[in-house]
Every structure is written in C-alpha cells, then in structure tokens.
Image (cartoon, rainbow, N blue to C red; front, side, top):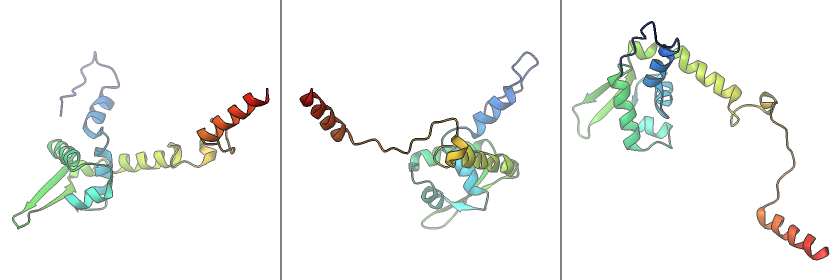
Amino acid sequence: MQNFDCPPNRSPGCPVEGTLSVIGGKWKGVVLYHLLDGTKRFNELGRKMPGVTQRMLTRQLRELEHDGLINRKVYAEVPPRVEYSLTAKGETLREIILALKDWGETHVPYYAPAAANSDKPATDAKVPPKTVQKNNAQAMESVS
C-alpha cells in the first residue's frame, strides 16, 4: 500500500484516493463482501466468483493480506488447506461494503428496478434481429 499522508497542499480527496487504492480493483470488494459472513477457503471464494481466474484471485488475496485487511491461514495438511478471514482492520469496512451492495442494488442497471432508472427512456418494443432488419430494408427497396 502506498503512503497517503495527505499533506495540507494535497487535494481533500486524498483519503478517498487512498481508500480506493486499497479496496479498488475488480475483485477486492467482492472478496471482502464474501468474507463478511466468515472464513472461506480459496476454492470456496473462487466458486462464489465464477468470473475470476485462480491467478487473479490469488493476486487480489495477496494484496488484501499485504494491506492488513485479511488473514491467510495455511494448515500443514496434504493436500494443503488455506483459509481466509477478515482482520479487525478489514472488519471496519463492513458498513462500507454493505453500503456499496445496497447502492448497487438500487442504481446499477442490472439489479435496479426500471423505476430507479427513470432518467432513461423506457422501451418495451423489441428490436428485430439484424437479418429481419436487413430483409425489411431489401423489401422496401424493391417496392420503391
């Protein structure tokens, strides 16, 4: 983690920049979210995030561990077992992560109800497939 001491001549947004450098990235927030309800093994986290590669998950977990947000516990077993959990510092992000989840459920188009996206025009009409559009255009040309 970089040092974000935010001297007086720095932008007032410096603490936000520092926070986003720690929890930013495509998968860190999701990892933290899944660890809110307790310890998880590596493969369990991977199953909860089907779009993440093992390499990327490993990288994100290492960064979160380096920044003191998660604990990594390795058991001396064959095959090796590794578990991840939130540290006390990571636990302080609980309200923030849950607020991000709530905001996403309300405002991200995939999750948000249509009424929440009222600034976009509602379209109930289905767009015909390109082949139908092409055939319609050809038919119109032959008529004229």
